[in-house]
Length: 317
Image (tube, rainbow, N blue to C red; front, side):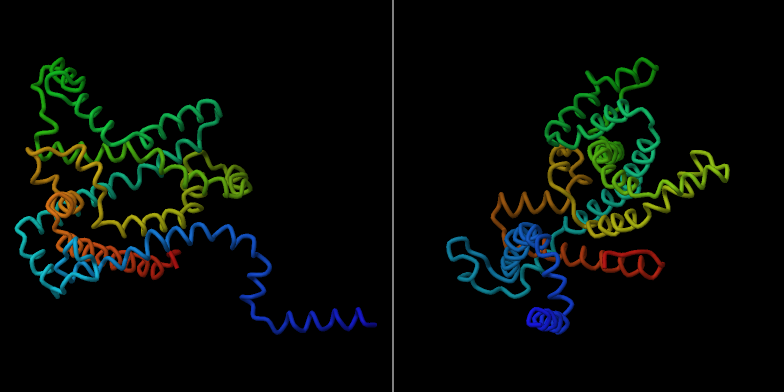
């Protein structure tokens, strides 16, 4: 009788507890596994945001972040008065838009092709070769690209001369440099980007392919009618994330491939922050540039997520 009464009391206490508490108690081990990731973002993403106040200060490295005098919006006025500022914005947007148009579909197409390979051995070899450039430094990749495209010794210009045409100075011509930059980014990242799409394809119900086969669908029809619609939520989420980085660009590739001859098209926000902020010590100015860049990226990702939800798709939240 006493055991029965205790069981009833435990059930009543469980009913009174909130759904969130019950969920936490049920999956506490999974939440514990999440703690390292949460700690990482708190330490390396949120705590450093305190340094954004440098954008509103006349920062002095000896006085520190909180000891430096306030300058108001002076750094932002100086930023918009820089002659190269709008050129940097244009270059960053141009390279990112080209990267999105050319580079975003590339891992999807590669994943679709890899998914259709029936030979497991050949598929593993292909994946390993496609992943390899991702693990190489851009300094190494840049050296390979310069060597391959060299007007005098490069194999590409050797083939062009063999065909009876004059050599092309790929890395010294602005238009060709943009083409090389875009294709190099695809070469470096497309193979690694297939991992997420291949993982999404493994979750597709095999019965959908069986039903398509019964209806007489071939390989191409299965890809169009089954595979692509099934991975569309993943495509939309990754597309939204890509839109959120339209005004951001890594520093490694522009530094590795850029040169003074094409500086007018290769100078982007990240290289300017490095040149002015790190080399010249203009920390307040470059922090203001980074803050504006982050605000624009946040606006873009919120807008892309909103329209994705309005279109009936799935967003980030």
